[in-house]
Amino acid sequence: MFVSDSVAPRRPRIQSRAEASILHADLDSFYASVEQRDQPWLRGKPVIVGGGVVLAASYEAKAFGIRTPMNAGQALRLCPHAIVVPPRMSAYAEASKAVFAVFHDTTPVVEGISIDEAFLDVSGLRRISGEPIDIGHRLRAQVADQVGLPISVGIARNKFLAKVASAVAKPDGLRLVEPGGELDFLHPLPVQRLWGVGKVTSATLHANGITRIGQLAELGEPHLRAILGPAAARHLFALSWARDPRRVETGTRRRSIGAQRALGRRPRDPEEIAAYLDGLTDRLGRRLRAADRVCRTVVLRLRFDDFTRATRSHTLVEATDASTAIRHAARQLLHTAQPLIAERGITLIGLALTNLDDADTMQLTLPLQARADNTLDATLDDLRRRFGSSAVTRAALLRSGEGISVPLLPD
Ligand SMILES: [Mg+2]
Image (cartoon, rainbow, N blue to C red):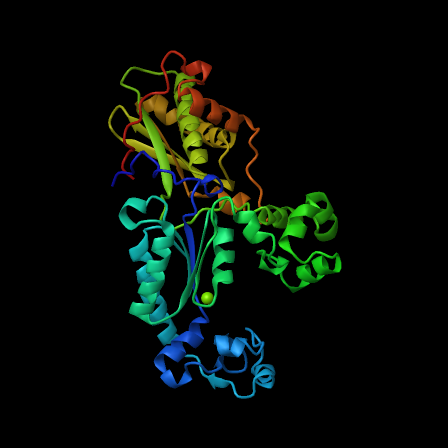
């Protein structure tokens, strides 16, 4: 099997996308809605699903202040006439499957968050499916028709806003946050709407007189840091200004990238081979960073005069997208293989980066922190992006160039 030598086309970074094309679709009171669907006599009544603990409550029950996960005794004190039904997990699993089938019919880019909730990226579907808001309306209608359940949809330029929008739209609604209108939408909302603000944080914020997201945004990060500590301050401050760079992840993205170079049959000295390897490293490092990925494993592939092959791999302690770290590992592998090369002669050198992960999951979990853009790698990447990939090259490669990409050796 051949691994192709290109990365999948890069979807636009969410923070810079011009249109609101991320949907967050979330079934309303999922378990309770399934029960009301399957047992019509429960419709319009306060329904609690669960035993000792409330797993789900219908909107009629929520109106009495019943929340999940509350214990059932407390829930029944709030609403003595609530109807408690035991959970039927297999029915919920089946309903979830049917809803996800609708999601996947809507767009290929679906990121499931839980059994009843997903992000959908509908950018690029305008010509086929219409505006995101039309897609959102249609999705709600299809879930109602085909599965018989109410689902709320939020649409925005990033995931965080889309999720807040779907929560605001509930029950059974749709809310579009227009580009440019993000802060008008967000700032009047209570701070509890921010991801990561639970009971403790909201109590702390309230004690400091901060109840709305807009107040938190105006306070500024340094003041916030004094109240919440640096990590939470950075995270919440970014969200309060509607900044959330995470993209919709389908979980089916490529696991490795590679490049190689044919060397012909004439003898090469070790420095020349090392220079070719450095060229491959630079190229792959650039592609890794352009795709916002990090790698754990560096694989060196060699082909010899007698057409035999060898691979050497090294797994790094920590995932990286830094060319220096990759180059160091690649050079080490080459060094170890040098006796073999001297003995058999080399006709092809290849490098693959595997065990790929998203840079976001490494760098942008908590706190939300964009990658440093003043590093050497970023500077070189930027130069190449602006002036072409041959704008900057290694001195050792000036005469020979970095070579043309050829398909990778079979695994
Ligand atoms: Mg839900």
